[in-house]
Length: 96
Image 1: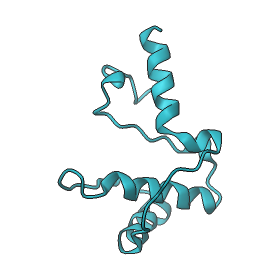
Image 2: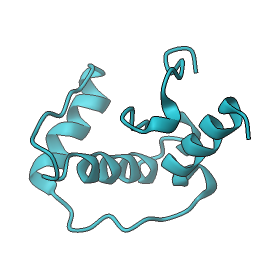
Image 3: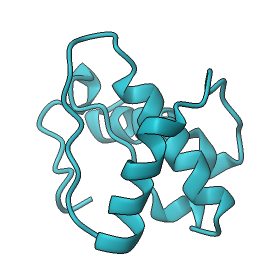
Image 4: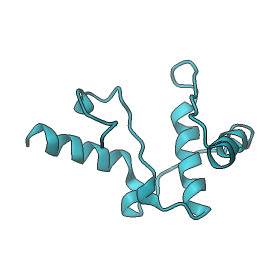
């Protein structure tokens, strides 16, 4: 498998909603989700979620993604990348 194929496979695995696959989202963190979704839908600003390792940042993002899909945002319009994934080294995510 060449590098582009590996990157494509990795991106598809990181975005299971593209294939209408549901994942375990854990306990909904409403206190965090509400301001995140408000920022994304009303203000349309870039959003950064900062925090220590293993505190739930990715889980909140995944919960946000599924909420956006439920509200009518097309699943293919949502791209999630984990840039610390070694399969995505030197990936031109900006042009993707």
